[in-house]
Image (cartoon, rainbow, N blue to C red; front, side):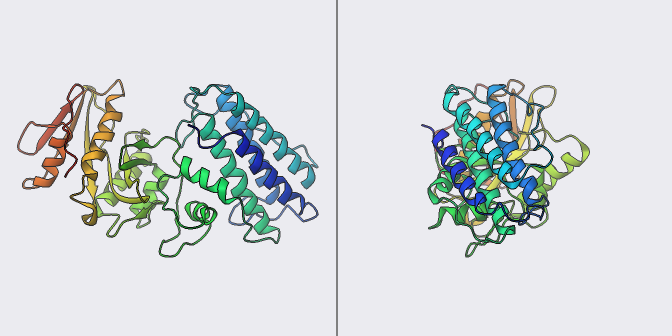
Length: 358
């Protein structure tokens, strides 16, 4: 069942248009709050997002954005910019309303169907309205809490929920503080996370990995003791792969997020993309406070299931330090077989065990 839909886009656009129209007599050439763009450019950006998302769906995009963009005519007034937002928002709404349920399209933060692009459209227009109003003399604008809650449910599985969904969304996108949680320096949403019963795996893209590697949070709220040193080291591997031009989306690091409360409890991932024989090595790291509760075992299973859906993969490998009995049990329960003193493998046809402890 879809979380967000065309009606949500219409509601968000109506809120945006009403709020922006109150300020069309202001100077929109000033920078939007927290952005390098002017308020004028930010409004055009909202329209660009709406049309890009609509184009991804109608163009059945599979690996990149459809190569077009929109601009405002020279001399467009702020009132004209509001009309652009309304017109392009209506375009996305119409596409989402008529999109087949099984249609998905590419986005750098994960492929999505109509519901996912609806959530992205709602997110973009509400957040950038907040940015524009903050620069034009209306700081602290309150967007829609119900719409924010839907966006969080669809795109931010890694964000702990408080009493105010709007504040949660502002925190998740680096725009506000929350008690007890450091404001993220880097953030992203996840349109297509890997979901298990109790954990969600969120891919750590290079920009997020850069933040994690340099003592940041990566946009996650961590359980006590996290992120661990192993997680930060693995994030550095993703950064180095990006710098060398060898990074391949999907074959890097993932944060292990506890579905019950949105807290990150560790990380898991691949050391590199599969080799010529289809073999790929995995590693994982769970903070001390979350060990012994089955999160690592489930995370390995979820990642293995994803890997074996990729046609190039034949075998998963993992290495365990001698004497690390807990990690050995994780791999055995996830269907791996010991192949050496510290080496374990799972082939495409292996069936994982049924135990959830570990």
